[in-house]
Length: 425
Image (cartoon, rainbow, N blue to C red; front, side, top):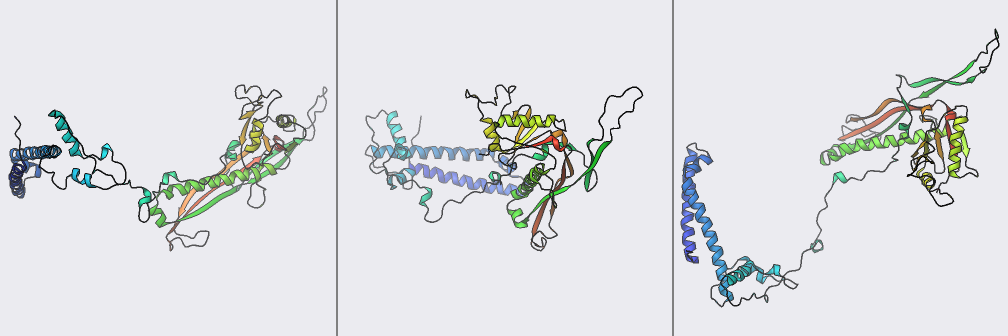
């Protein structure tokens, strides 16, 4: 049997339960002064604590039931009012500026409707006349300022560089412990080999040799950060070395293609003396490239081209070349015919923006040597001065330095063919 309690009874029982709570607090405190832990002290009065919790839960349920009954009584003409400060009363008087929805109906109204259904009352009315809603708050509603932005270091947008590393495509050789690398180049023979009659004099080849020297080129960059930036924005410590790495590789790529060999510059492929050249003339781009490959094969190097460097725009035009019937000449479905979008006539195509548009470098890569005297190294210093003369120690700054020493050499210049006049737009 369910016993109905009123507000006065709830308050009386709550007062008694509060007194029990105070008694428990004092007793547990006494035990703790005697060396008991919190858990041990509570175990000594476990029964009383369970009694206090059970009574508190029962009182909470009784209050909720009384609130629902009060709300229902009001709808049915009763005189029992909802206590001021309840969510239902507040919600019903909040002014707003749009039509009310079911979400604006107070919880007590829904509980009253539920009780009316259980008791099979003939009618129950939810009065929405006094229910209004306030306009939703948006970011434009701030009297001043707005929500603060959030810095997302992992979404940092890096400066773009050329994505191809031209240096990596050539024959990598161990570098000697010296300032330069030197090797012998066999450029020809004084006499060719030939047939000889019995007891006849054999021809003396008389090899023609020349010494080629390639100095190691240093490619480097520095950058400085304040210690405050490093402390406040730790992402810089990992990002800046990576950025220096990318910048050095990009500069090296430009040197491999366009270096003029003067001063501290590397002698790039486009400026090597003795290379073959071919202009497109009246040929189609595909025909011109095929002839350039053949030039290397029949030239004095008797080499076999396997790599073509070209500008992305020139490559794009090449991939769009079509037959008279409208079919693409470079066919990904049948690369054995001419090639696919990344190769042609057995040569790999590499796009590089440091090769001028309209130019292609056709090469037998085994005759282009690449040496690394010092691998790319990144070092940190906070005790010297940077390139602007700033005293790093006195100014709380840290300098990052990236550098490498490399060299390339074209052992057989006629294994490189510079093709010009190809489409440049």
